[in-house]
Length: 519
Ligand code: XMP
Image (cartoon, rainbow, N blue to C red):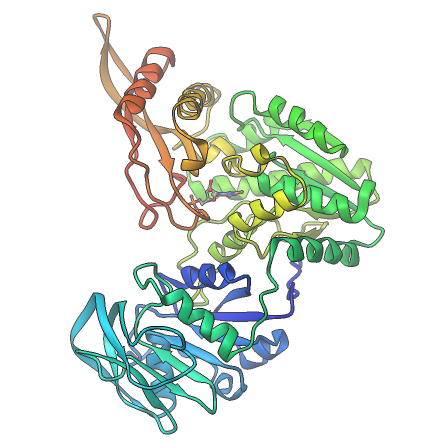
């Protein structure tokens, strides 16, 4: 199985990730400038970088100290590629150490707001004030400059808060320009990408939709494509882009895996009529549910579902021998979350069913036009290519469906209970607050049973969790402070109307450390 990995657009910034909490935030900040960027693990070689010909490189922060024996480094040849590099926190310390400077533990760790003063005119801080408040989070410090470097800014505790080697276009900042607490940080990053590295702002919804259509045409040519449709914005956008590129050589398939929300199948069928694209609906619920019987491990569930999807598609395509490509709405966060920034398997968070869950012997070639996009970018592309707003802003629903919202074994009875509870949550939230204010809202059926009392009798039934989150791209989330009256109404309706639930809780967890879905 080979996933296409061509650079989608000319001007590229590569972000090398040292396991930073904030690497994705750096990516968001660069994309917000309409500049394309990719996150790569620190194991990337100079040769691989050259092959992608980026205009600039950003080294992220990270939890390690450059003094630790196994702390992450980069291929030494990267320093002499003649590409502008900005090191942030750990990235700056690594640059200093590798260039012959001195890095030492600070007298005390520094976290939070700090004022820095710009000490020398330079391109990085151009147009910014001289006294700036920024966000620090570090233990080590650059204490001695490498040869050819000059200090750009200092703070009360840090004599070298930023440095440059003007000739080699190497820059370092000890603070985190990517976090919103460093209010002017986005301007500094823009100075680096645009002024220092000369990146063009080509990553706009209009240009990227045109580019995506062009690339699909080039890749697929006259072959036939099967698009896996879930009804969500990602797969609908994928389908419409492909339809614009290759017309009726596209066939869409919607698989009812039996793990859908109440009435979902009908709703998707109705909504899709708008596009005039061939849609086949396959009821494969028996297959999925029988394979999931007795399975409780979340990763196993995901793998089984990923594999079953492909098998159903393959069966379908046996009748349509001419289909060569499978299209999916895989997004960039799915790709990032399925690889470990440190190069090993240890910190893979979840195998998203449409990336790591694909079987090795799959017969289709993949076409994934949204593989480099964040969710908010997909929504903009969707609007750009004429997808109605209610579809473009539909709340995300994961491919594995309710399987990852039923904790423990999946049974028909649990599915019924969750579908009913989930419908109440959706209807109540939609009728009370603006949908745009929340990113996702749903019910989770836990495997925990608790004692209750109904009428005069004892009950022993499931605990249901109500989950609502705010987010920009699903990579981090917060929980909204929903009105108590709304929470009370949802909980009361669920317990009174859904047979099998006698207790409700509201999930007040952020991501990180939790994730949005419970499995
Ligand atoms: P987590 O739970 O990882 O979810 O915080 C982040 C976003 O991704 C969705 N999600 C998935 N989407 N296949 C998908 O298509 C998957 O396997 C999958 N797992 C999670 C989730 O609903 C949220 O929007």
